[in-house]
Amino acid sequence: MKDVLVVSAARTPIGKRNGYLREWLPAMLLGHVLDAAVGRASIDPSLVEDVINGTVYQVGEQGFTLGRMGVFASNLPDSVPGTSINRQCGSSLTAIQMAYGMIASNTLDVVIASGIEMMSKYPIASDIGGTLPNGQPQGEPYGEFFFKRLKGSEFYNQGQAAQAIAKKWNISRHECEEFTVASHAKAYRATVNGYFKKEIVPTSGLDKDRNKIVMEKDEPIRPDTSLEKLATLSPVLGTEWITAGTSSSVTDGASAVVLMSEEKVKELKLTPLARIKANAVVGSDPILMLTGPIYATPKILKKAGLTMNDIDIFEVNEAFAPIPLAWAKELNAPMEKLNVNGGALALGHPVGNSGCRLSITAIHELIRRKAKYALVTLCTGGAMAPATIFERI
Image (cartoon, rainbow, N blue to C red; front, side, top):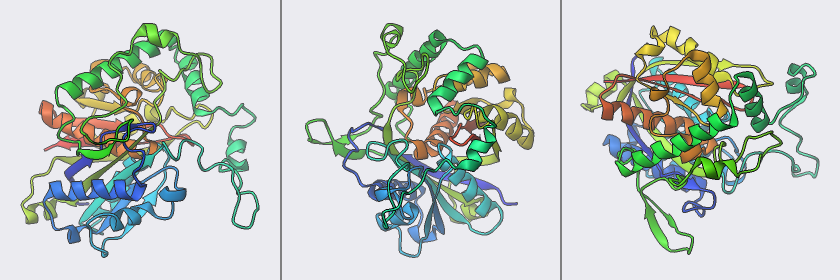
């Protein structure tokens, strides 16, 4: 198996719901980050052998094969193919893992893995309901086989699953709100100190008055978030106390990384950012749905021959506050290493984009700290979790 290296990485600033990115077409935004990643790698675009893109709601302008449409919207030549995959919130981390597999197996040498989600236009459940061209009902994506796996248990939506996880791991609303405040504070500090600057590609858009602007920082961060404000929020999604404040927000964004075999990197005399040390993916309990990172973490550590103590940075997606908190409690993880520059509670969670975005942030933080290992994992709809360990080189 060949070693696989991350040569470049680029992401847009995350846009809040109906924020600065609201009029971008998904293919154009994906093309924007593809060009940025290739430009940062300083390679001939024709060397790219495939684009693997993660998007959850593959409907409308995000439908067809968005990976290929992103190529057409970029400066990449027609010879570059593209495809789109869906592992729910883990889609773009899975894109990285699939690109890794193509390169490690000596099938390809240069692949771009990417993610994009425009949730302002295609929010959660955009693929539910509707009719086929012949007028027949489109049908529901949750079929009888999923419900059979519940074995008569109540079906939870993701918010309700987060609430059930909080109950099982004895996590309180106050703990979740403290975690949320910390997430915003860390993300704001990272922004002010320029920690995200090298990973972000400045991206044009519109302000609230429709004036043209160039955004260079993430929109959703609220530095004035406080325990007092969070305590006033009402529960959402049919839960007891999960609120909008302790849930990731509806957001837009895109990201891309260029991956190469070590041999190709040496041939082109490039300076890589990181090496992919190990990959893993698990399925988990479909009732609780969002516990996958708890099981993906020990699996990938075993594959990598590492322990929790060896990892310098953990990026565990903050889809809902109880998810990383339950992960930390179950695995006795050091909180000072968890989501060190904030997470989705502050930055937002453009679902198909998040795995790639978390990876880009983790890699750049490894470089900034001169640390060695970062572990990235996300819970997903359908009860799964991919995980990847990156090594600074």
